[in-house]
Image 1 (tube, rainbow, N blue to C red):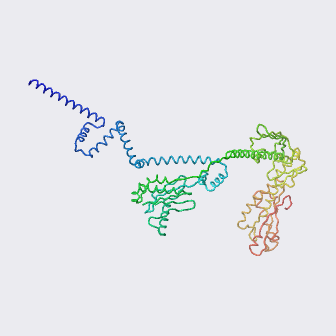
Image 2: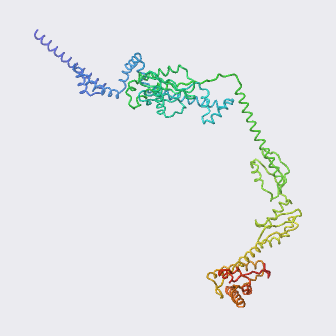
Length: 597
């Protein structure tokens, strides 16, 4: 018995040890599984469970390790996220059933901008479509609106929208009641707004003026202001004021929208408004409520059974036909004017005109010296590429063409004008160098071949003779002054002799080219004082001194003659000593072909 009992005890002890060993193994395997699932090392996990099994563990200990465990598990795979989905969905469902405003306010910052962007995009597309449709309308009303758009600088669609507008809330202001400062401001699309702070200050000032100037109760105030087409509606809350600027006639139902908006703003932001100290950033949350007030309504007329499109199409066809007719008539008039002008040109004979291969053509005869047709086409505003010219050359005997041939033959300078009279006499007028005059006279036989019966140049001025006379005048204007009673030059008179030398050379050269004989007469003078015989001798000596000087400079002595006049020809009346000085002189006279000019 004792052996059996002993064996049983040993056997039970062995079984217990195996069970404990199995339990320990199970515990180790479970711990390892937990460590893998949570991503926490075994020592940390053991410490974590020790704290969980400890009844004295507090929330602070769990809060330190739980976020880390969740993060590590989320980084490993998505099992934790999938496990939490039902719980989160149930929580959201419970929150919505309890208070829908909580969730709507939480997601509003995302939905609000997206909604506004979608509305703005739709509005832009609507305006573009609306503008496109209106641009193609041809009603009298649309023409009136187009004129208004041009005068005001607005787009056509904007003018139409304003003219079909029943009412539109263009701006909404949220103003602090105590300070009068603007908390938030919204503007309708396509509306140009002034400085919102300035507007809010004006509204506050008007409110204060009404309250201070009239017997009103504490909670009463100004509710409506009208300025032409604009009306301002004001709704007051406990600590703020809502003001809307309205264009047109808004219905009274809109006031309920304003009242509902100010109530919602006070419910949501009442604390922020009450504690307002100048920072407007917290009131951005009121913008969705304010934008809900930006209502508008347009008077869209009912479609009538009319023939607008038919009349518009007919009008377009009429415009096209009218435009085509206008250009066709204009081009035809230009063509007829060109043909007529071309026929009147000397040296051109038009024999035929017409159309060929879609182009206009003109045929006839043309003298090589006739005017170029390109110039006439340019004057008539015609396209040279659409006109064909078919010319046959011929020699024209028209006076203008004959003159052109004579000009080409003679190569007359610009100072010479040639003209053919009714007797075929070519007359030259103007002025020309003597060389050209002589050359032209030698061309008389060639001119007769051109149909010119006679050439005359009696009215033609010889430029070389004129130049010779100009040199003569310059020399005769020179006088050389002397000292009293001597043949000595006054200071500065020698320079006059230097100028005289170049002028004498010019006139001698010109005389040779014209085959003219030149004689320079040098005359001596004295003042009226002294003996007459002595003055004659002194005058002669003065003239001979000038002649000797010129001869010494290389001039032929035979070209000079001397003469003494003493005081026979005084230059000035001798009322002063200065006058007498000018009478003691030598003067010059140029004689051409032994004839004094």
